[in-house]
Length: 431
Ligand code: GDP
Ligand code: MN
Image 1 (cartoon, rainbow, N blue to C red):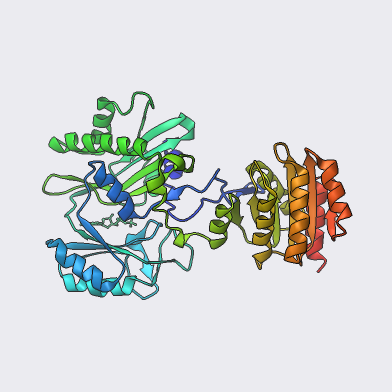
Image 2 (spheres, rainbow, N blue to C red; image 1 turned 180 degrees about the horizontal axis):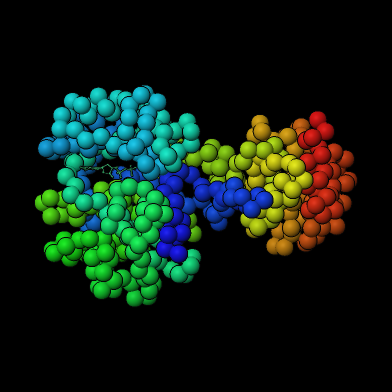
């Protein structure tokens, strides 16, 4: 159980929205209620430092020259230069400039400038990025410290425990999924009581399980407690430190940092959410989010316009069942306005992959007539070129159907989900 949880935990994906959906029992995309905010390492480390967690001294640079200057200013024996992208596995990554490794150690400041030149503006490909990699816009220039031991430590919200859990392993630095698979006995877990917080005995047991000895154990326990108070304070869903290491000088240091935040807490974490850097997100996703819509892109050609994640999954599944492939889905969510329907269509219409649109709305809170008015307005103003199949059900559906049929627009209406999927698939295969 610990193993599978860790895999979930360190779903190390720092990339945009987790996508997971089951088509024919195969996990295709993952539906998260909303996109969870991720920050870059340097931003996460700033939060950590502010909460008394031990991180190295660092500067951030977006030009090679600034990186060089930063390296000089640090006056460190050794410098570590790190590409800032939201994906993990940077150490073993490769740039399209030819440079190997997104994390470099050097004692020569001039080398920092040269390396930064081969990082900035280039794409870094790691195990966790898309094939083409992610463009590096910033580098972190930090004081390097020697590491005698690398451990893994994370705190995350775990559905199975209905609350926060600490997960750790004395075998850190490496892929934790691999440790979980090959040495599950080296994964340790402590369930945290949300009211009580991390107890001393829990923090010490974790420090001990991570292999910290003597005074280092006290230090590690102290860092663990501080990481938990940060976790609570910033409304994190995950704080992951890999490696959580020790130095020959006897310091416990967080060498890497990944924090995910609960989007539902945006209203009280304004400063953190203002740091959101959408340059790595799918532009369609970002645009959808601006209108309070959720867009998830897929590989097929039938756009799905739905309300609710469950209906989205069912719609994609049934398209698949009838031999079609969803191009995306756009989730309207709850309290819908006509303007959102219009924006949704605008987005779907702009996606070159889309060869048909299937609307599948179940009106509960949502009033179907509002949807119908949004659809007809969008069809007229956007000069929709692809076939449109609409299945509406629920609140005010008769009025909605009247609006659609009296519109004179070439809208195919469907009696139920099966019918809708069949018609949508037929409309793209007929071509
Ligand atoms: P990731 O590959 O994206 O997870 O990036 P990390 O920040 O975890 O760095 C990768 C590896 O580089 C770590 O596991 C360490 O082995 C090494 N590393 C990072 N910072 C330092 C440092 O300050 N000193 C030393 N000696 N190694 C470091
Ligand atoms: Mn790491």
